[in-house]
Amino acid sequence: MSKNANGKILALELEDGRFMTESNAVVNFLATGTVLLPEDPLQYAKVQQWQFFEQYSQEPFIAAARFIAKFLGLSEERRADYESKEEGGHNALRVMEQQLQQTPYLTGTRLSTADIGLYADIHVAVEGGFDLTGYWAVEVWLERIRSEPRYVAMQWSTYFA
Image (cartoon, rainbow, N blue to C red; front, side):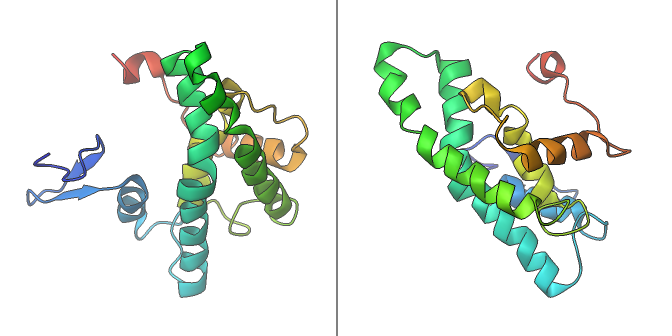
């Protein structure tokens, strides 16, 4: 709790001993001055728009369904909660699909921290029961991100060791 008053795991300790929390704030802080975070105020706001979307329209459904199915186990007691995530998750996927039919990345023509944040859960959405087959633009976007020159797949066994 001394590092993150909100009691969550993510905390970045800065060189001067201060801490930064909340995943999107940390990612944007680390991306400042790179091509992943635009300097133009409108483009920056679009990144934030998609980051809020990730937190409030995707995560409570797609990420939550995956967490239930993969980490808690899909028992009968959890089935109703798990199934309640389906409609909201597909709504989020439809919004992403609509945008990605117009632009190669969520905010336009360049990869941003918004894409990175949403990629984290969308590329494993099937583990939460979300079949992406009907979302061709989302599938193309996932492959586009995997094809980025500096893309590195996460090694789960190392991460959870």
